[in-house]
Length: 420
Image 1 (cartoon, rainbow, N blue to C red):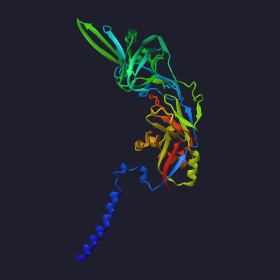
Image 2 (cartoon, rainbow, N blue to C red):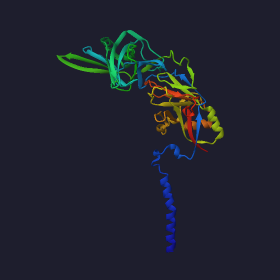
Image 3 (cartoon, rainbow, N blue to C red):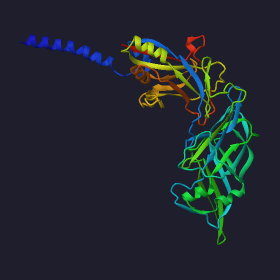
């Protein structure tokens, strides 16, 4: 009986040992240190775009976003672009009404804009000729504004018209407004009445400025209008200031004006056999189709499981090297509308989606695994849309290889790993 018990214990120990080893091998420790393609016992396949073109982005929403831009710029490829800001002047959100004390003496009114950077060269100084005008019509809180829209100005309400020196080190630009703005602020009104009565401001750089574009942070508390005052009571002088909102907490939008004279963008659609162009500020966007290769792959591998798929867009040599931060990928929903792909929306794959520029390999990489799997389930490709993530406030643009360049490794392509 004793020998039987010993034999039983040895057998149990032997059986238990490989289970422990197997558990260790399945551990997630170190999984981020291995390229994800090595985790699958799959095969690699490449889909090449069979059609692509560049088209005008003529429906860009710009109202009430956190960032905007102001400035003028041009280059030989993309032509000229102007960016103009329109914004309400509003009372703080916790203020139901407002009454400017008649005993208060206004000393100055300063418009401040928090900046996110200067394009194209952050290392040089610029002479920016700012113009600030009162609007003739209010910026409406319940209205959606597009990049092509504008509002008329009141020519009698010019509050600033002068040159300011700036550099990439400046984080805020402050404009001391003309004293005729005082009458705009001296009023008694509710929060809604104040917006309707003051109308708002148009802020732009005039043509006499150095060429450049200034990014504006509307979400910063430093983007505001501040009235400095003092008053005398019983021979005692009191000073203070009142901060009016602009940007965050107000309705605002950015207008972009493009002039493509002398460029290739003379029509709304340009074929992408040679080059594809991504331009911000309501400029150019890219559409792709992989329908030919996708249907061929689906016919040959109807039960394929996609473990990983990456859309790769190689940058062309004539690009200026100032790469946009991220390319976003959209597809078509069942109703034919453009919609963000699942890989971009899924919080768990957002880190893997990437979409940023890889300097070592000179391409943009977008993880599109979930989206490609859904296309294979339906058996066809409805089309892809590429947009610049920072297109509402950054002038960075990209020039990409097209579908018929000689080197296949430079064409728009999806590299996938699958098993079946």
